[in-house]
Image (cartoon, rainbow, N blue to C red; front, side, top):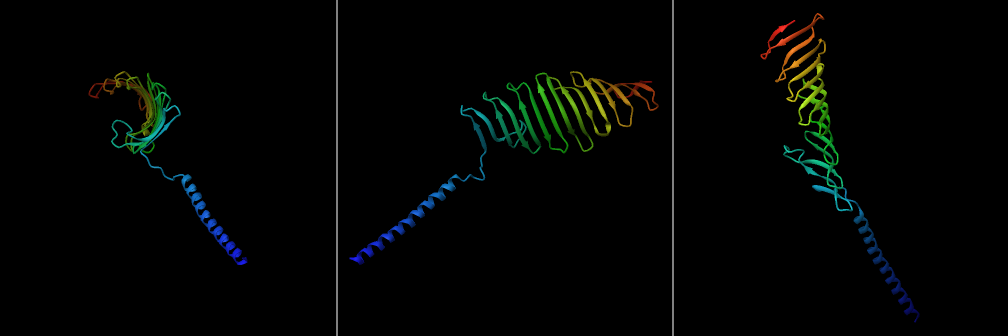
Length: 231
C-alpha cells in the first residue's frame, strides 16, 4: 500500500511538471506574439497618404503630383485643405527647386516662396486681385544676376522694378501697360547717375545725366540708336 502511494505521488509530480512546461511554452509564445504585433513598422511605403477628419472630409494629402502643367515627372507635394475643400497650403520639392505656397479661402490672395535650381536664386511673391509683388534674386547666367523688387499689374505685366545687377549698380524702372514705355533711373558703379526715357521697344530715346566733366548733359536718340542731338 505504501509503495502504491509513492507511485501515485511520482505520477502526479510528473504530470504537474509537464503541465507547467507546456503552459510556460504557450504563454511565452503569446507574449512574444503580442510584442511583435504592437511593434511599429520602421518603413511604410505608399504612393499617397490622406488625412481625414471625423467629419469624413479630407484635410491633408501627401503624394506625388506634377509641380505645374509643364512638368513631366511627378514630385512630392504636401497639400493642406480647409473644411470646404479649399487648398490653403502646399509644400513641394523637385529637381528645379522647392516651393511653399499659402492661399486664402477663395484663392484671391497668396504668398509663394521659391528656392530655385541655381545657387543664390530665391523669390518671395505676394499676389492678390490687383497684381503681385516679387522680391528675390534671379540668375540669368554666371555673369548676370539680379537682386530686386518687381511690381506686376492684374494682367501679369511688369510695371515697376528696383534691381541691383552686379557691377551695373542699382536701377529703378517704371513701365506703361505695354511693359516697355517708361522711365529708368540708373546709377552704375563708377559712373554718373542717368535718367532714361524708353520707347515702345524699351530702348532709351532720351538720356539725361552728368557728363564725365561733371556738367549736365542731354541726348536724343533716334529709332536706329544713333544720337540725333546732344548738349
